[in-house]
Amino acid sequence: MGDLDLKPRLCTIRKWADFPGYGFNLHAERGRAGQYIGKVDDGSPAQAAGMKEGDRIVEIEGTNIGNENHSQVVNRIKAAGDSVTMLLVDSETDKHYKEEKVVVSSDMSDVVRIETPPRPGPEDDKDDEKPESDPPSEPPSYNDVQEADQEADQEDETPKPDRAPTPEPVPVDTPSHNYHPRLCLIRKWADFQGYGFNLHAEKDKKGQYIGLVDANSPAEDADLRKGDRIIEINGENIEDESHQQVIQKIKAGGDQTKMLVVDPEADEYYKNNGIKITPDLPEVIFNQTREKEVSERSSTPEPVSVPETSESHNFHPRLCHIKKWPDFQGYGFNLHAEKEKNGQYIGLIDANSPAEDADLRKGDRIVEVNGENIERDTHQQIIQKIKAGGDETRLLVVDSDADDYYRRNGIQIKADMPEVVASETRQKEVPAMTFHPRQCHVIKWPDFQGYGFNLHAEKERGGQYIGKIDENSPAEDAGLRENDRIIEVNNANIENETHQQVIARIKAGGDETKLLVVDKEADAYYKSRGITVTSQMPEVEFRQTARRSNAGTKVTNGDSAPASVQAPQQTRSEPAVQKSEPAQANGGDFLNLSAKEMRERIAQKKKNDPKQKSNMDFRSKFEIFQKM
Image 1: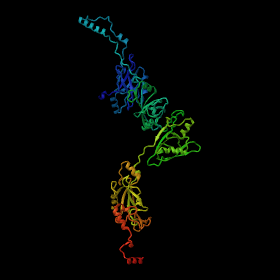
Image 2: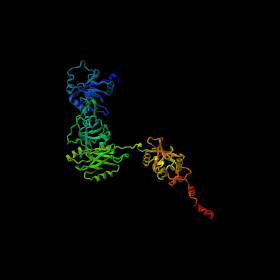
Image 3: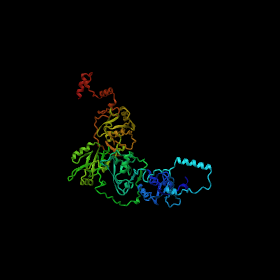
Image 4: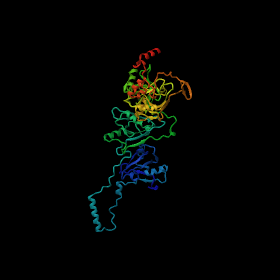
């Protein structure tokens, strides 16, 4: 299609006396703003005026309708009576002018004007017949008369109707039944609180319905109406879902939500005819909240006044589903009772706690705990009910203003009320930085025997673990803890090595060794996530034994200070990791000996009692006695 063919059409459509309606209908396209021409009937006034299926309507009777909804456009067409003038563009023409940033109007010079031609009625057809009295100028030949007679006979055998039957037209605003589900895309405005509608369930009817729609709200602007039944939310059918599930789906949309709805009359029609309502039905009308520029917003938006007796009383009990976090102690709130008031109330809320995240607020009165009304329970009973939930609990609460409203109106607060707002603690993944492996650089002291720790292995868990830690030892000073699991020794991973191999690595360090360890909680965390712990991880904490001089002082950063360590016991044996020295009594080098070697070592440690020598004579024994 060349640029010469890209012209808007100003179509004046006139009804014919023998044709009901204009012969076209409207539809809205999902994801596209504006009103479009749907089906155009063959042989209709609309077709005769140059209207085409898929045309976008720009003007009606000289008025731009770009920002009007479906109902407003239908009303304009009906108000025109038996003739209506519409400025139309097909999809290619529409795209062309948008790319050129030209606003299409009926005043443009290249607009093509087309009108429905007048259609003669039956009486006009009789007037146009020639009188039979006029004789032909020449007498017909025999052949001509014979052919004419044959044609006349054939016409008599099959008489023709006065005119071909016209198709049944479709009214302008319906696809034949005048019912339209609406797909409403509702977007929040920065200067308006929420969407501007509420939900309610009707006892005698299944499903979720639209309650009051606030005036001048995003919901009203998207053509949401009171009494509409909700079919889908954000592309998902919700007809069998609960009130709370529907609320959560609406909240999941963030600052916008898309709702497929039907009014009561349309709902009854589709149910009676067994028609499943989906957004793919051709009669679905798409409407959306208009974008609102910042300049259009008033600095102080006028609040919407809502009568207290209506459903949009703006009081909302809250069902708070509070879940504990692994890196937070408890729920983060406490309870208190007020002397002048009955009931249990929420006291202080810890900042950045699971309770705060679930929208629990200070001063809330508790109505239910885990689905049970607790208004007559004692303080201790409520605490027990909360504890019974384990790591999570559900609290139905009201703030003081809502509490006063419901009591004043004699309304029993329940979790299934339509205005209840549900909220819950978000799932919190504990970051790895919460746990800190420790790289412990253990350095021997000259006045202390060994490192001051021993090793043990656990059959069920596998791996090498730190056993007993001696008080005031190099190991304790370096931050080593009992039950730590060893990951690395001197920067080498030892998780798959034997007990003897690990001891050998520690001994190889001489008077110092580096042990990468994790406590029980950190070990479980890293294992559950398949994370291999290394000394290169950013969360590793580095600890080191404070060095000591021979005089028994700690040396730290070049400065010396008296050592705060007890004088070493002279009878203390050397730890397991030191060669050719007596082993510690609590394990030490004995763990590295065979049974035979251990018996030999014990035999060597026995005192040499000269009285036990069997080959010593009496004189030698007497001399020993004299020396005592």
